[in-house]
Length: 193
Image 1 (spheres, rainbow, N blue to C red):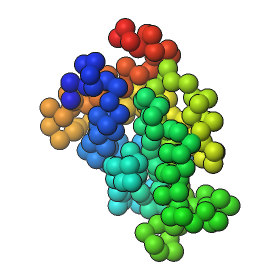
Image 2: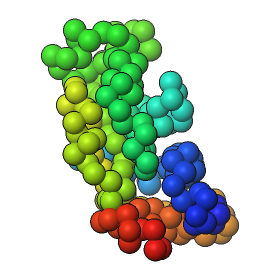
Image 3: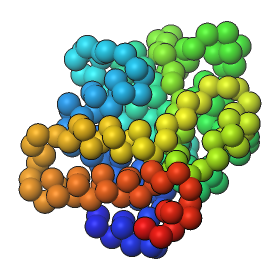
């Protein structure tokens, strides 16, 4: 994973989403804390007992399913995924074309049954990206913006005490440093890094 620090891979959204996916699956405490970080509330262990993390479902970067939450994550380093059309497409996929139900509350149908979960939508974006264009494209006004400095601080402060082996532990540090690359406030500073 150290290759992410070279110029060719440091803007590769897929590399970053693969790392988010990989490390969240490595440590249950990290995953629980990440979910709490996103939804901004305490959750019980029962909430994340049978968590599913799906990468790439309907071209959505990450979908995290917990007992009561459906968390949608779009990683947008180069702002190519956040057109009005794309955001609306992801939104429509998640609600399963049941817009009457979701537009009046914050719940969605899951797996064609009557179970409803609270749905949260997030766009991860570098600090140097213009969030106004992201907000304008969110015609449903449902996506929360998470900047890379927030992700950097989260992953830096929540390093698992023990990962599967020392090699994965070293990769975690590389992962956090790769996130740090996108915490610059303007892209001219980022380009110099």
